Image (cartoon, rainbow, N blue to C red; front, top):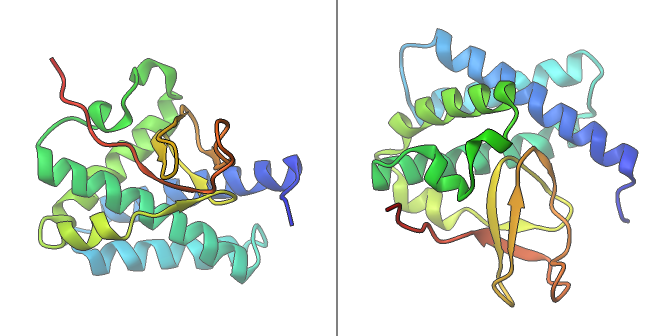
Length: 175
C-alpha cells in the first residue's frame, strides 16, 4: 500500500516531534550511551502513543527511522571528525533552522555514544522507499542516483531507475 500525501505529512510531523523529544531527553541526561539514546527514543515513542499522535506500530516504525538516522550521523561524526554539513552533502542554509538545531544537538549527543559502536551503525544504515528520513543525501543502490533531503520526508522510489533500496551517499571530502 502506497502512503497518501496526508499519511506522509503525518509521519513527517511525527518524526520531527519525536526528534525534538529525543533531543530534550538527551540534553537532560549526563550519560551519553547507546542505552540512553534508545531509552530516549522509547520515551518519545511512548509519549506519541500516550498523546494519541501515533499507534504503537507507527511509533515503533518512526522510532526506528530516527535511530537509524541519528546512528548514521553520529557514526560519521565519530569516524571523520568533520562537521554534519559534510554528511548532508549540501548547503545547510537549505535546512529549516529548528530542524537543524534539533538534529545536530541529538547527533552530537549520539556521536559520543557511537564511538564504541561505529561499525555496527554503519552496517545498520539501510534505507527503503516508504520509510521516513531526515536531512541528508541517499544514494540508490542500483544506479547510484543521489536523493537530497532538505527536510524530513518519506523516501520515494529512485526517480532514475525505480529502485527502492538506498544507502547514505559516500562522504565526499571538503576542500
